[in-house]
Length: 287
Image 1 (cartoon, rainbow, N blue to C red):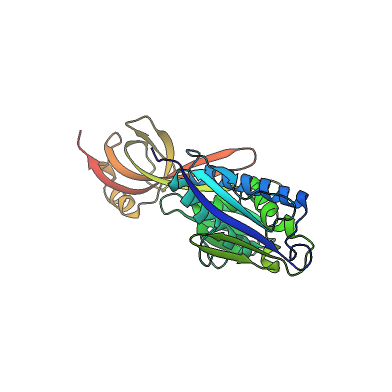
Image 2 (cartoon, rainbow, N blue to C red):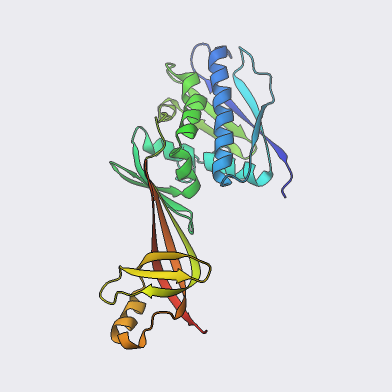
């Protein structure tokens, strides 16, 4: 079990006018602090798959007149590192990166995410928008597709500087500084609901027998595994299908095979659909 550590970082707000004079409205400051708390706690839950938490403390006294707020993430070091890396806190070139939430928000701007496709084996993801696809990591995709995370990012980056021309926001950590200008700050818009469709692909191996065969198509097969999985499958192993087509009589249902399966889970508003594909029939298993 990882021990808890404390990691500090600072956020600063700057713009001509009151922010330039090191003052900020107390209500705006409170909104920013609550937003940062929600951002860190939600991000910790997502990047750890719900297995870890992170607390957020304010180190410098937060009061009207502050320009910089010093935060401390209290969590195990692995969770803290993942949270900061995936958000983009202290990440050099975070705005230009497709592997940070800050960088993806800069690309999305006001585009609506229509669908998220995540491959858990490679941790690669695609965000589908009306204007095309944006590639990123699985964790970052989950962050920017989350209503709670997007609302928190809006409160942290945009709300305190809204209506101020020439605004800048800096995130400063030991690893480096990330600076957002006025045009980049405008991209942190909230969304009303979580993305309506998310597709997650997971690959694993099973020992299975085929309980229903379909020699004329890659669809319409069913399997049963030794540990209880029963499912209809699509065969995507062309080599295996060719062998079956050449010697149908030699192929017997009931034989066990080691196979690589891809589970495709699609979560929609009112339903969850699960589909199984056999990617590779690895070998026949001796009785």
